[in-house]
Length: 470
Image (tube, rainbow, N blue to C red):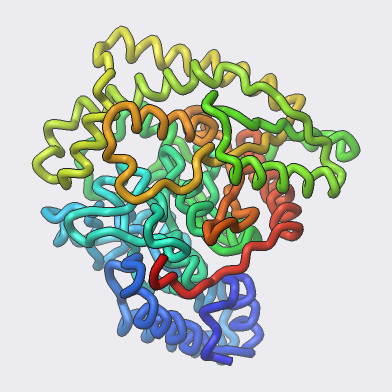
């Protein structure tokens, strides 16, 4: 049995450890062995804590045997993206000059997870400062998509997605400022959550002396990634514990229940204005059909102010990137520099434009709040493009414009602080394709419920063995 424990879901592992059917040491060792055999093919894992993880597993097993009270993640191995503080480990952000930036305390979400019994076994790869939808850097190199080595695993949580997809981890912790949990999740055939802003502590690292700028404050969240929706539920319950240091953390409750007999889902089929890739269109149609079969009323809608939201995001994010670009330029890879230059090429970095974008965000949020009183859920693509070929995003300004447009609906969630669950729906030509379910703020449970309907109707089997050649 221990030979295939790396195939189990996080929920299955936790239940079996608690029932003493398996030991935490068996589970941790199985994942360490899987890392040793699979990571060389995808380069998702950047650091492994074998001795520490096995010692923690032995302590967990002793607690189980002695009948001590244990947490919901007792004895479960997890992996953590390399831009989130884990005490005693380097928070590198994928940057060579930060390779020895050892955190002296855990980020709040990691402290919550450890208190619940989770064991950090490894760190995962991320692009330079997380500012790319592909995972590569000069410190660790590129992470490969285990389904197709020529396609991107996504970014910036591409290491987590690839690790989950190949069974090197049952639960991963990433973050999302512009799709960074959701785009890698669907690219690698796993699931990812962008929680509501304020639901989970947004503090990733204690080591930065510079406070976050406006867009990062409202858009960036820490979130779980896993192979099953139920595992996202399990992790979120732990991760959303109070954080007195994060002023955005909110002890919120879910919005009122809509009429169960009249639950409507707004279907957004072309947020980019460029059309959907045929395979993405089929994935979206398949997910919509699954929801209809379960009793949801799925109706196509035109997403309001979607172009204005795109413009607002670019003015906010681009202005902030432009303000620190020269500072980080000596630290980042040449590819990252090329991409960031193409992103900020049209930026109007002045106070008036920035101020107007902040005001515009309020109008967009009000409009979407009104829409979601009618449609408590919105179904749409994460990207209107299939996972792009490695190197595509270095193709210049026009390429970057199209890539950003393809993620309009995804980035809208960040602008407005909405929760979104991304999941795979089908595999075509060896590539997983998926969708996202978006909810009202703090309505993660409704997103989970709809996503579980799609997951049950359209299962995508993971973990997989990495593709050797294409």
